[in-house]
Length: 375
Image 1: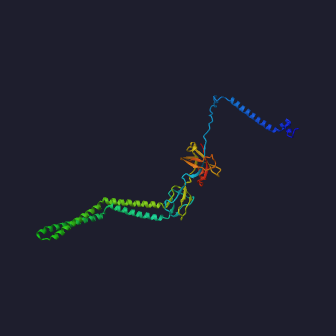
Image 2: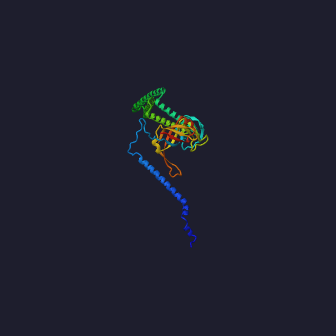
Image 3: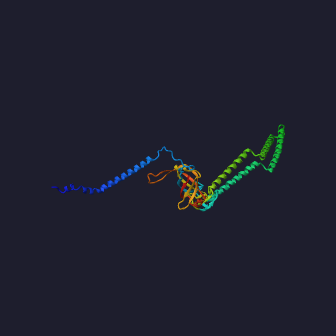
């Protein structure tokens, strides 16, 4: 007698086929797709088989029509707006000396010319007085040199000549007195002491005449030693004046180039800090400084046209490549993408903005823009 499990063993085969129908349909569908793929692959293989062999020469283009070749591609990069003159940060010329700013002669946005006085520090007056003192010493040294070069005046020369004649006459009288005294001594008519005094007077008169003649020669022609000494004193005084003027220049700030004051960091009464005194730039000519990857350099050339896209501006501005940098710079970029180029090597390329771009972007120095350089 069979148990309950025996009925499952004698279940009709048709019932088992009905229960297995979903799996069977999936298997049939997969088989059909595989057959279709095989048929498509066979069609592709048959198409390849029907294609002409590689040795068959290509069909010639019609006369007058050149075969199309892929053109050179342009270069895209990020850049920034910068004046062609660069932004000049002016600070106190005195170096380590810390001096209070006394006067400021410009304001932000003011146009200045090259060499124009922009600011003055508190020690400028003291240094100006040093210049005046040095110039006075120079004038004295020059006057002394001219005196030596000119010699004596005509009146001085005439007076010295008369003095020489007077001393010569006195010398002649003293010599005669000495000779007369010497003749009287052997006969006992004259004393030896008197003769000795007369000889001494004659020698003194001769010495005074010699001294006067030397002074007369000096009045006519100055000595080379005196002339050299006077010239050295003049040179020393001139150097002192130059030093005083250079020192005074350190108390004043002048514009190195013509341009516009775009920012002021210190006001009268302040001491100039690390940011400097002010920033100056020539806004009449603007550049776009683009950082171009080193791999794109072969596609660049001087004079190539470009377009500049400015955030917030609907229009695009024209530019021209005017300079390509000489140094490849290495910039490390931080990012989370493991396949990103974190070791970026770029070259600084400067593009000159056109007149419309210069006028529109004059007040946007250091703004980031996008650059598309055409081939």
